[in-house]
Image (cartoon, rainbow, N blue to C red; front, side):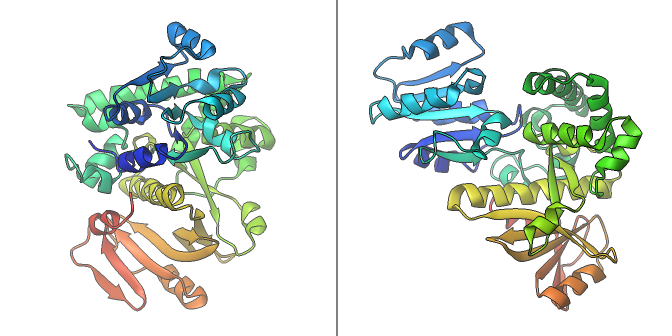
Amino acid sequence: MERIQKSLISKDLTKKMVFIVGPRQVGKTWLAQEIAKDYSNSLYLNYDHREDRDIIHSESWLPTTDLLILDEIHKMKDWKNFLKGVYDTSPEKLQILVTGSARLDVFRQSGDSLAGRYFLHHLLPFSYKESSIGKKFPIDHLMERGGFPEPVLAETPEDAIRWRNQYAESLIRYDILDFENIHDLRAIQLLFHLLRSRVGSPVSCKSISEDIGKSPNTIKKYIQILEALFIVFRITPYARNISRSLRKEPKLYFYDTGLVQGDEGVRFENFIAVSLLKHLSFVHDTKGTITQLHYLRTKERQEVDFCLVINGQAKLMVEAKHSDSTASRHLHYFNKRFDILGVQVVRHLKKEHVSGNITVRKAENFLLELKA
């Protein structure tokens, strides 16, 4: 299956270094190696391999190398300055592609020595739009399998389930422990499984702390780790004053919809959340536009699932419904009060229609109009 970003990443490589970040096993290494096929003398080095690690430390790749792919380089001590040195002293013909887990994304958010030297691309699970480029999969298939390459392409549902069980286990036992020293593995396991059943609902660290027996600050730290490793992502209520928004309870969604425990409506909402995040990430990565995904909620609990914010302005409200064809009264409320365009995306819908200023769309048609 083709990745939408491939040609754009190749173009960016002619200008700067490129970082590809995203969840583990989402296809970063595969994409890098597909890009390498367009080069005469590419070299892939994985810091986890001893021989590759020696080549990296000594910078002993051949002078004819035209594409250098560095995987898991974030495990190298002082890797940021290492990359800066390689980039600043390499011949102009050498292009550098760096792939890795969330550490690169966390690093991007802080001050760094690589400012101005790289472009960042997020690689997220397959979307409905992306899957329609090659072997087209129905939405139900992507909701069940979760959008990661291996389970999506698995021959049987059982193979996909086996992959997910191993994936979830490795995330907790290896990735999380490798990312930060966690003294209570059982607590973060409980949190992980508890969040799977609370998708789409406001998350209270105080409430969860009572369920798990850890302080609210510890729960907050654990959730931040899950976010940093691309396991879950948060969306906060939209407010014109962003500091007010951050003080309110967020909602959490999983990058892997297959991990969600709930009815079809909940899983469909998670699938739409990932699709919208992928769309906004693509716009940000390729256009430089500042994008954010929020939700809308009043003190009277009038709520809309998602709000797409572009350069600080709310541009579109999205309500995800599994089968309800009647436009949500909450969409009408926010449209009338704040003049924000609204769309209700329905999984099972006979006919698309307009209700006042709100459009009711079939999920397939809406998703195909997203950027990625």
